[in-house]
Amino acid sequence: MTNWVYPLGSAADGGWDVSLGTSDSSLAVDGWAHTGVKVATLAAGAAIGLPAAGEERIVVPLNGSFTVTVDGEDYVLKGRASVFHGPSDVLYSGTGRAVTVSSEDGGRFAVATAPANASYPTRLVTGAETPVELRGAGNCSRQVHNFGTPAALEADRFIVCEVLTPAGNWSSYPPHKHDEEKDGETNLEEIYYFETQVAEGSAAPADADAIGYQRVYASDERPINVAAEVRTGDVVLVPYGWHGPAMAAPGYDLYYLNVMAGPGPVRQWLISDDPHHGWVRQSWDGLDVDPRLPFTA
Image 1 (cartoon, rainbow, N blue to C red):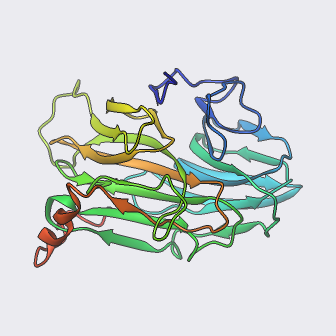
Image 2 (cartoon, rainbow, N blue to C red):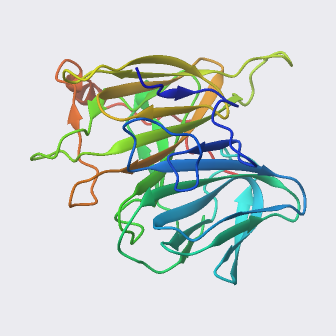
């Protein structure tokens, strides 16, 4: 069976901590065609590049600030101390453009990618203009940064966002799928890149192991069965099937970068809930959003 779970270090490639599904990746994933993700850690003053290719890209600072050079033009990305410090500036490069990322002080960043045909302008989306959504309620409350969704960004194929889940909460819930082109649903691969932290104000010891969990299971005859423990730097690929919950274990906050794209004609996130669990949405009626949200700087 194809490997869908990549713990930190298992998807390293050259100077990249993670390189999966991208045009220059040497790590092949059987049956994976529509999305990619790269993550790099730069020392102070260092840089790393991506050649021009037929894929659109969006550069997302995880910690630190960066300068992104696209075909010779520089864009300064005001970053953040960590993914739990609110939205960062991000840069959409469009397609067919060489990209170089550098950092004066060092840091870690991700690049979401998708093979694309149409060319759209390079665009800087600042943290201040990023749509922040508080989704769900009660212990299903989570925070979504919608910088790469169809309503926020003009692009060809991919849909990109960040989700932050406070300790003890569930997100990507109820379990849902988007693996068919049909009325009310679009066919989209999905990548989850995870980071975790000890929740603020906790009495955790110095050696606390910040963890979360991710579930993916079959929606039809295609086999998939993932129940993965995840930490900072881990990746879970969702080619099809019901997925959720993504669980923030008590004591530990959970972050994931979502990258979605597929073969369908419309760039839209349309989902079907698992009929056994969709009723849970109605149970949120009258509940407040978790008061620990939003995560900010």
